[in-house]
Length: 109
Image 1 (cartoon, one colour):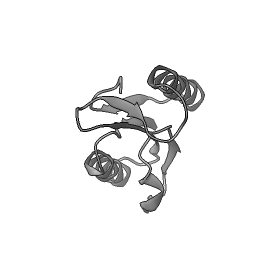
Image 2 (cartoon, one colour):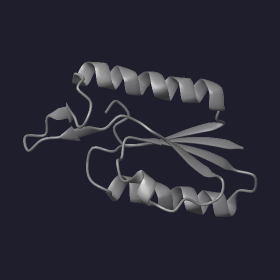
Image 3 (tube, one colour):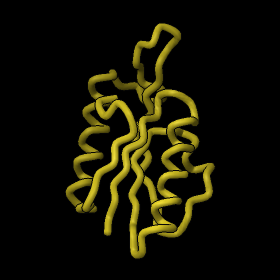
């Protein structure tokens, strides 16, 4: 079984930690499960990942003090970066062919 997970990443570490705990639980309960996690969290590589879980790092977005979304590192506009992220997610979905797609919060961010 294949699970694709999208974890919203513009608000600190809480979302990515929660999704990793969910993924670890699912891996312990479902035999032969493979999970591909999609996130722009710049901290994702710092976590120890269990067997059966891998990730694709998306370009980072962030929010400023007013809540406005911006591009964190790339010299691109928000619309271009969101399009790039969308295309990466679509490509991963087509190639990975998940049985289920779990979206954590705000799928358009």
